[in-house]
Length: 298
Image (cartoon, rainbow, N blue to C red):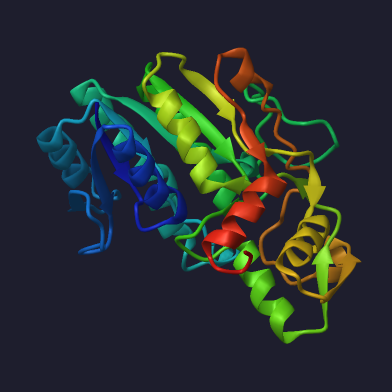
């Protein structure tokens, strides 16, 4: 299958190219950068430019598109001078991709987020729940992207993820490792609950998914139970052999975020198994693999 992947300079896009190519697919990567160091065919593409998106996808003519490109700087998105750009990428850019997919008859996977919900309560969010109430500019822009895909296409997958980490880029695990090496004590939020998503594991699922016709909404994070950022940090330090003391604080006590974060990021992933997809491994095992990959664990 010929598959076009956007956002390959990011954590997920990078790993997706490796996974898809390893399965024998013809892959073409894209990002907004003029060039990206990659062994795969690459196209520089600004997804906010509708004509460029249409021309590129018509020329490449993929059978499927996996749309990973996004504005992901959640706090920065709250700045007044950044909001228009955030919506142009996450909402407008996604609409452009979906419209081009419709024109060429390609199926599409759109990577979305737990931030489309209001983050209240303690019950896991079901993938087909439509009680949208995003609390942040980022969440609102990603929801608009979801709605555009569902409006324009019939052959689509919307896959919501959370707490992403992978080798190719910045993430919470790397940040905590750096802080843990330079501080005796760290304060970490204990009242935001969810599950991490390791990009190589997610890439395997998406590669399984894209060759099927089991379309619809899915949630995909690693297994292993719901945790807080505080609990995640403790496990990071335990596995990395760091003695840094981790102090639990509430979101209110921490008080550094511009964007409102969801307290409840529990995502119900049961639909994966119901549709014959293999769930992602436990996050503890994913963390171990990541630490080995970046040389922080033997």
